[in-house]
Amino acid sequence: MGLCDAPEIREAYEDVRNDDTQTNWMLLEFDENKNNVLKVGNKGSDGLDELKKHLKDNSAAFGYIRVPMSNDELSLRIKFVFLVWCGTNAGIMRRAKLSVQKAEVTKVISNSSIEIAASEQDDLDENEIMLMLKKAGGANYDRQASDY
Image (cartoon, rainbow, N blue to C red):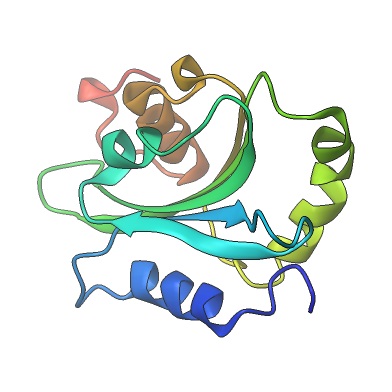
């Protein structure tokens, strides 16, 4: 079985992408019994803060988050964040394999506006992520109220 072969991974990805569901994040974790296989560890509807509660200091994981954003009061767009988590106490072999495994994960999680590599909770500041999304979004029609 390959890293991302479990059908529930694609199902969770599509669930996060679906505007008709409440699910706005998912976290793929390594299966404890199969070291190089991912499973859907968690998913939820309370955004980044809820996802952060599931990130462990001694593990690696991949996250996917749906973020509503707007540059002005008239536009609302949905953006997606791909998260590569490698906790500060993750094992050396896990760290070494992560970039190769990320390439395989992005074959399934193929649509994101930005990618964030994080190893500490502080790396996931919601205001910073929103600014990164705005910058990645191109034209900014709300320059007077913008931080960039």
